[in-house]
Image (cartoon, rainbow, N blue to C red):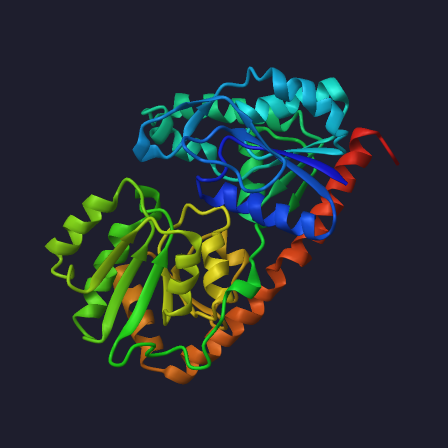
Length: 380
């Protein structure tokens, strides 16, 4: 099968959408399919992989690590028909995504759209406006795009439940981002990786929607009760400096390590050396980092989240708590004081994560592509 993936960001940017594209592309290439990626040009970056097709782009402020694509690209318009694509797969509903829909219609190629995120919840980042009118405009734009697709992919049931509020009426399959299982090496004894120190870890964007001020307040409670504990916050984002100030105010700054943005290889190392993964976000559509933590054999303590409950088995590989600092703190302390339970949860987490391996989910993606082609060409 010959696939074109269209997105508003790609390497060197690393985020959930980019990770999804990379991992599925890896799985498809391993199965001898062709995958071309269509994405904005990147400042001072040269692609090492073949068949990455770049749109001209306007660099945005360096702290955003993004560029704004200019979709007037004659070289792509000339070349794309010659690639003889079987499927066009859009990962965003606007700009480059709109180009994907245009090519789908002009060249009569089935269109698949992955509904990666709750777009209406992120208007404050890009439009600097956060009111219901703006949210409704965003919902309409996403709805109009999604209803042009032949098939939709949702990363979790939480996204499927959201679709009626957008007015989307297209076939949908739940298909999360896969995990590169082989990169994670669970330790036989995941407690006390460093003598007299228990390492709690969070991985992800350091931003308002991740609820990290709650996580720091919770850690302040457990740190006061067990001097072995340290917390590593792995990732960058707009809330980093504010959270450093909060850690100092809570008098835990000597027990909290902010790594900032790190390459994926270092994320793997961080997870492989941690003892317990803690997560407080309630805005996830799937939480790839949660699956990666499970692949590393880490038990989880997390705030209840509709999307994440689809991927975990409470009381087997994780402990799920209400969004109350005392409850989450009690769960953390209970686990670290019961090493056998913690280890059993870690083993269960790894076994659960193996269901989301690249080969397994790539096979399901190919089924979605076939369903999209059947719908597009009206094959009964």
